[in-house]
Image (cartoon, rainbow, N blue to C red; front, side):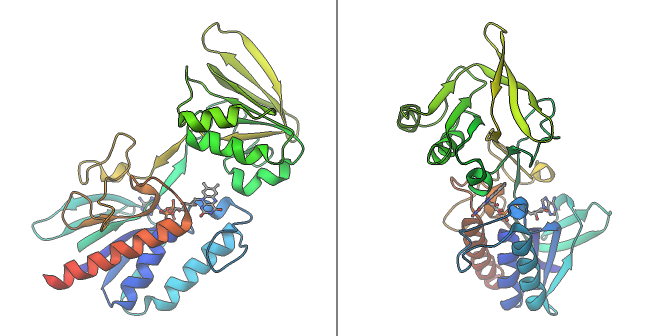
Length: 307
Ligand SMILES: Cc1cc2nc3c(=O)[nH]c(=O)nc-3n(C[C@H](O)[C@H](O)[C@H](O)COP(=O)(O)OP(=O)(O)OC[C@H]3O[C@@H](n4cnc5c(N)ncnc54)[C@H](O)[C@@H]3O)c2cc1C
């Protein structure tokens, strides 16, 4: 039986894996891929200790760090998904997508999340060709240009605020009847002279030849159809946590994020901890995910050794 199973090879899971190895916990480490969500980014500038790093290099470094320390303590199963977790009298049975099963005393869930994709015609074709899910990665490319942000929450407004610093104009399209971001943020962003916010606007199609040249949206109230010229489209319509396999095992919130105690990362199921973007914490960043996972590992270690 393993003492610990860590699920996820992003910054959260790998940080926990390195600590597990150094604390000599017999650990099963399962991940579909290395590096997590920001592997799509070309330039991450806030991974502390590194002024600039591509997402792919970050993934390579994380993998290398864990492999260097894994030794006899951490067994790595790459290219594998955890498909199911079942409570046993003592510990848990973890089933991978291959059908292989393992028993473990404790579990750390660090399976992260994925961006909600824009449900519009051609959105997939124009991804990375003007349509992007990351303003901090790709925003500066659109300096001096007309851009669109889709979404109406804090993430969408913060993205708009960032883009206003260097783009020619920002138009924010919100499908719903109101903006969901904090009123003070909404007011501040919308007061910028280069900013326009449009409600009841559902994007239906992305236009362009090789790169984005604009989009079509429909007014959901009167069903009128509108064309908008833009060279950049920033999608901020939410995240989907990778937690389907946890249903019935740990308590999830209304957005399917794992509910944790931020003091120690414990879920409401004894023996299961969670960290990073799959949890109901307020902020999602590489450094936060890594730090939360280290906190979880410290607590797991103390709990296991106290038994
Ligand atoms: C486009 C983009 C750009 C970003 N840029 C930055 C930035 O510049 N700076 C910054 O700090 N943050 C950035 N972020 C946020 C940052 O990427 C996340 O906060 C961070 O990756 C969260 O780490 P995590 O380990 O919790 O989860 P993730 O990074 O989501 O990693 C989860 C891992 O779990 C694996 N996995 C999922 N399900 C399973 C399963 N069932 N079984 C096994 N493995 C599974 C996945 O393969 C993945 O490796 C960016 C995010 C995006 C989307």
